[in-house]
Image 1 (cartoon, one colour):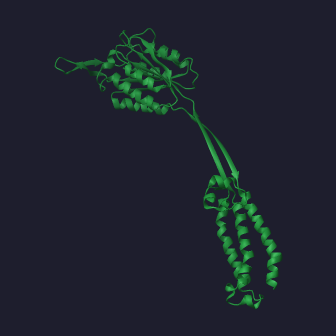
Image 2: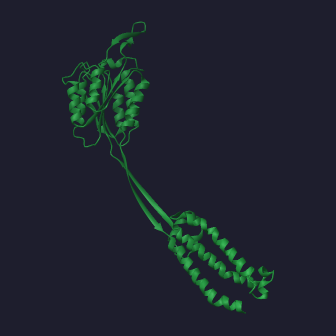
Image 3: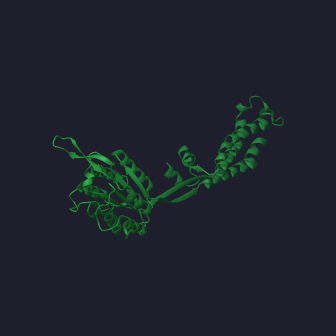
Length: 349
């Protein structure tokens, strides 16, 4: 109905259908509240000018005035006048049709995940162990991203890029599934080397926001690049660094003995270096000791690193007051014609 109405000529009666009137927005909606006043004015005019007018012919002044055909005929110009006023008020209320189009886009963030796969990540203070807990949370993190390029670096005694920056999240999660402790022969934890590989992968990125998330148990024991130097190099390329230490200090379960009981080993964490790396990289340091805490940390990072959503709004507004104005003008001309000729002759008879 709306489509037909909006393309009809002004003299079409579809302009007065409820569906058409309900489809409009009104520039001056308060004027619509004056429409009942038109009916009130009409009633007052009829009572004061016809019902109590002593100068009318006797036939029109009788109590049964409302039953005479001439009485009804006298009302015709007033009905036309009332309709004309109502149409002019509709035109003044400015019926409009607005089509608004919103275009949204985001500028994605480049994110590199650096994941420690050293032997200490087998410690079972997380369920089932530190590495598997980190992989599971990282997969959930990837599921929550949109339009961001994400890559993966793994490291132990050395570091290499397992997945370049990509928006193919399905492929990326396949790489997560393949991560294991035997991917790198050299033992140890080369945090500096991991940051070096991250920087090498992201240094040519043109993204306005570049983020590295470093997950480790925190002790740098291998590699030929100092972690602090590597962090300063990453910061020089505009890379923001979040560092996450996973694991508890002290005695932690690592494997089982002959009788199936957990082996307890001493675990130490270099929290100072990880804090310094995050500080240099203008990021944030986190320390987590269980699966839930690790999940919460990734949720915080996810909230921090949201791409800015930009939008452009296009608004096309069409006015339709002229249709009701034309109807009002036509009724005004009809009213003037009736008052000046036909009805005057009738009343003089």
